[in-house]
Length: 251
Image (tube, rainbow, N blue to C red):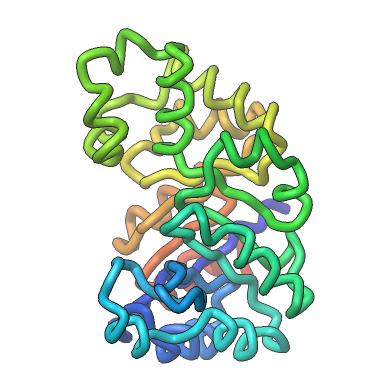
């Protein structure tokens, strides 16, 4: 039976973003995964932070190791949305210290196809859901989508989300995305819910490419994602998402 995961986004259920309260809320509600944005502070400590902030502000952010300690015996998985690519190996090493492997450590965010192509061990140490904007950046550099990107290349490199919103996930683009994902051997694709059309979902499912959808908060959108067989739904409204899954799948 298809078993979609529900991931509690940082700041779920109106808790503070980048907080241990958010993690504790995810645990209490019974989420499958907790998502945290990860950066390396100037003192080289991995911190939970969506934004790049001052040293003083970083000092008030939770350390990633605190999150591991809190959930290590709770059964939840952890999705590290890595905001700075240079933090990747530090995250992997810390996860290994807490015995988190690819079944409990998911990576998303700025993990790039270039990193995965250079080091295949990354996908053996963690379940990687490669972000769609990182894929499009990589494929555009290879001139595979020249018609889509030639005039908007600077935008893609500097503000990729503006670009992603305008590129339909269909046709040659989707074919190339699927091919790259299979070549890299990643867990799946991470994309915003606005790109999850029924056609795209069907092609990804047919190609056996799991896809994770974010950030889905409205009940009707959560239901849509679950019904097109998303492997994971990341949400701020965890309780609503769990109830929706229960109504559809019975668990």
